[in-house]
Length: 370
Image 1 (cartoon, helix red, strand yellow):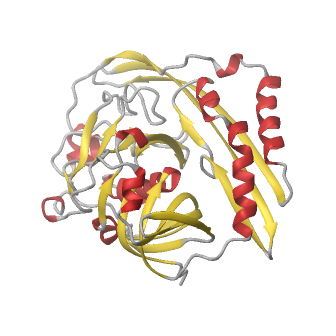
Image 2: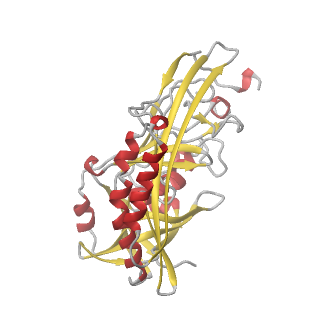
Image 3: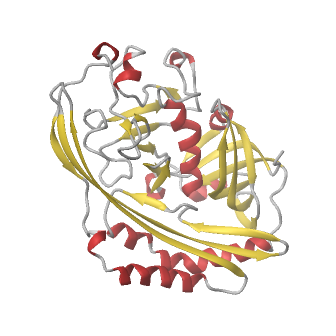
């Protein structure tokens, strides 16, 4: 690439090693197998037809040198895992996962697996899967929603994060940013590639730019983008240090690092307490976005009805869809930092961290798959 097509960066030299308190590659295979066996035993109850458990560890050594004077060496450790139980009953299949269907990832060592406590969640996961086969279906009407956990992480990832990656098909163009609001003022998100232990953390991106922390959206308005030197130069900006790649085989692209949904002040009970009729949803069973990134469709594994501010009973197959901007414009509150969760998603081989707190969305059409 011609240097005229790249935004200027200050050459940087150095090294970076991600945090790793317990080396996962020093843990005996027998100990890892014991964790999965214990989780499997916990899920082994009547009504469960299939049980899955997985652990994932990856270590990468990266060396980068360019002709402008930048050079760095980095060591990454990525750890993750998850469990899933499927119940075959009442002529259907219901699924429950922890902490998400594909597991969750973190830029740390084996200590993260200990914190996930997969065996400790196995029984609840299995019991909820069986209970779902006997639960009433999600009603078909406009309801207020409380989104939590890995479902919320997916919602942020696909309907906000993608739209802020310069060069991604369907992403917002910087010319539109001054007059475009992607959400209500209740939504503020930041990107932080230097977050300790984040799934998307690093010291230098794939073009040698130092890790950066910056706001992407402030109170619903776009203030910055995820970019590399080429995409930034094309719109008269400087790189945000967000060039990433799933492996040496794939060219880097502007991509999410660690996306932080800024906390509000509400408790989870206050979010639900402000709802006359609604649903609390967690864990994505499926999530899809339109090619333009303006529309989406999602189904949660589990829904809890909220009636007059009280969580009442479980419902199955909670489906919802909509226009991304209209959906986020209905957000009127976010939970406090006490409810914050750190989850890591793997997308196209690239790990992305998501720090999320539950949010409340008003007036969403649910229960209609067509």
